[in-house]
Length: 388
Image (tube, rainbow, N blue to C red; front, side, top):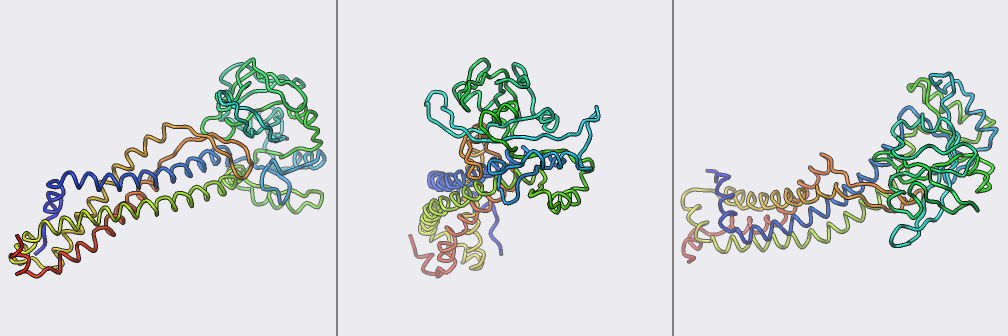
């Protein structure tokens, strides 16, 4: 004979206070676990969304990012003339030669300094990034000390608003526009004319060359052509793969941190569940004896108590996920360990995080309930019936 599922559920309802307290402890652990995973996923998603599958980023070999890369003008011209480069509606080659440097700027309110990416753009940079939209002001004039700020920069850094000025590269730069790049890393950048920025920072070389493929399926051949050319010391990556690589170090750090914290917190939640279930066994000794006398086998008793602890874990997991989902409303900023620049991003919840969190909560429930369940199943029928 098997004990019905409702038996376990009703017993939890009978002990509302202990059930609520135990489930709350598990919910807190799941909240921390899910939040850390959402943080890592939000960072990865922000950087991956920055890139386009059809675009290719060309940087110097062995450089891990554009900040560390250098491409001289001759090499940039060779890349520009490759047959793999797509043509625009007016016959122009969809290539952008860009400069990327880091500067230190003070934040609004706190005046605390932080690294910010300055990107020197050329005429086709916006054509290659269709997600970037100008939301206020205008584009900077070529040959001028004018710049445009991403929305995150305009909100968080002094001098980032339209009409305000930044001081860097021995010049004053006037913000003439604000652009929205959606949920991408470009929102945390400042853009200006590449030639003016190269002069200001005394950089004779570009950081990267970005172009759109004429045929996206020909990327492998294009990559081989660039990397095997003896005139070039460059490597090519799909833009989406390049930005995904930028997220790996930070995302790995966040996952390790999250795992360490949740292991520590989960020990307390498991002990709490174990105490709750041991208390349930002690208070229902006579009831267990009656069930055994009615013909229910030991494994049925074991299964009923395990079911209670699994339900506790599931309830805690659902509650923790519910509160963690509200973290998606927050935008935070942190340093990208790959580029050492500040990056703003949001928490991101997906199906993988949901099932991992629920599985984790039910494992906590199982570990907390297995010993009390074994104890209940091993009780002697006569001794259990004699208990008051």
